[in-house]
Every structure is written in C-alpha cells, then in structure tokens.
Length: 82
Image (cartoon, rainbow, N blue to C red; front, side, top):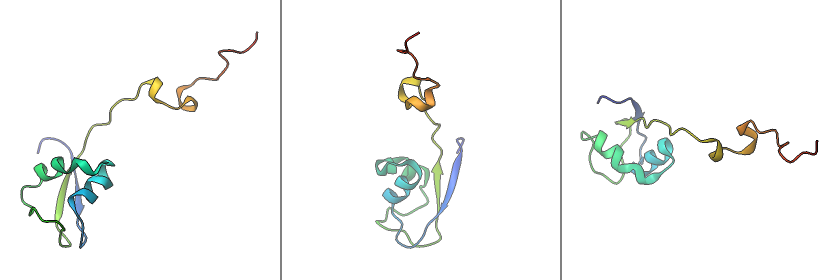
C-alpha cells in the first residue's frame, strides 16, 4: 500500500461498519476498509486480535466560510459604528 495506513486490532464482535465509524465518522466507508484488507474474511463480526489496515484519508482543507465565526479571525466589528 502506497498510502498511509493505521492498524486496528479487532476486539471480539468488531464489524466493518463500526471500524469505519470509529476512524472515518461514516459507517458507509466500509468499501475502503474491505479493499485495503483482502486477507480478512467477509464476516459479519470479527474475532479478536485480527489486524485491520485503515487507509488514512487526507483531510479536506476548510474554507473560511465553512468555519465557525470564532475560528475565522473575524472580530465581528464589520457593522460597528465609527
């Protein structure tokens, strides 16, 4: 794998969707996990102590408009009387 990966050691009962939620915040990212782990069974639940490779997704840069006002550097004085 040329991209960066994390290693997750399973606990009894771990599932693809739970691991995706833990690392990506989105249980629908299981396809990314499955593709990175052809050595693992396509099981509903994992046994303990299996290594799951978790590809690192580069963070998307945030624009100023996407950030809350207190992180934009705005001082809120745009409409201040001078």
